[in-house]
Amino acid sequence: MAATKLQFTSKPGSFIDSIRAYREYKKVWRAKMEIKLEEIENQIERSKDDPFYKVEMV
Picture (spheres, rainbow, N blue to C red):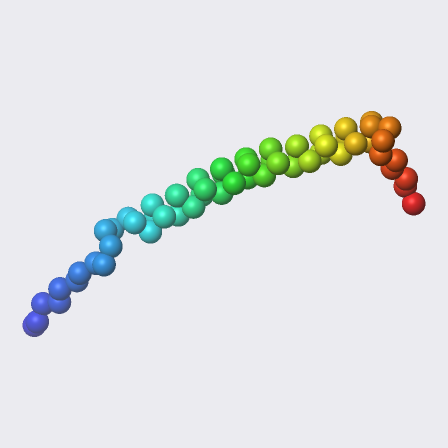
């Protein structure tokens, strides 16, 4: 029988490392989006309190 030689193009475990890195990236992204949404909500609340802006509900 002829022996078959396997050669990997990348180190074993690099796929799992990339999944871990992606999950960490998503955590950081979600944290940034939470801060951004909180800032937008604060701006909305400040504009509602500001007499310069008139908010009408239709």
